[in-house]
Length: 212
Image (cartoon, rainbow, N blue to C red):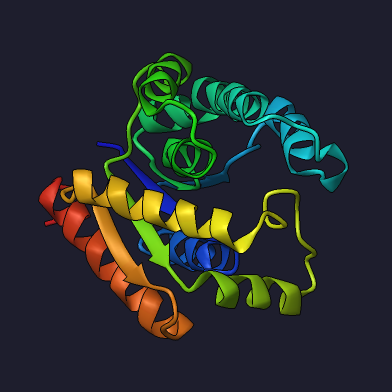
C-alpha cells in the first residue's frame, strides 16, 4: 500500500530539511520511501523550474506561471510519482498542487475553479493522503533563507503583502480539508518539528496497515 505525503509552506520554513530527515527515518525502518520536489523532479521539470524561478523573468504573468507549474507537475506525476506509488512506496513531495492554489490563486487572484480544473487534468486527479503545512512568520522565513546564503528566487522577491496573501490562502485550504492537512509551527526547533512529523506519519502508516 502506497502513501503520498506533501509538504507546503513559505521559503525558510524548514520544509527541505524536515523532508530529508523524515525520509531517512522511514528508510531506517526499511520502509519503501521516495523523495521529490516541485517544480522539478524530472529532467523536463527541472528545465521548467529554472524558467519559473529565475529573477530574470520578472515579466512573467501569473497565468504563464501557473501553466508552467502545471506542466512540470504533469510530468512529475506521470514519470515519477505514479510509478513510485504503484510500486508501493511512500512518496514525500516538497510542494505540490496546493502551492499553485495558494500562490497563483489566492495571492495572484486567478480563478480558483479554473485552477482546480487544470490541476485535475495535469495530475489525472492524484491527491495527497496527507499534507503538512509549515506555518511561519513571512519575514522570519525570508530572513532564514537570506542567512542560509541560497539567494532569493523570483517568487521570494514579491512584496510582503503577496506572501501574506499566500499564507491566508494556505490557511483557507487547510480549513476546507482538515482531515488531510496538519498544521506545523515551523518556529519550533528542528527536533520538535521532526518529532511531530514522525508521529503523524507513524499514525497514518499504522492506520493504513503498513505495520502491526
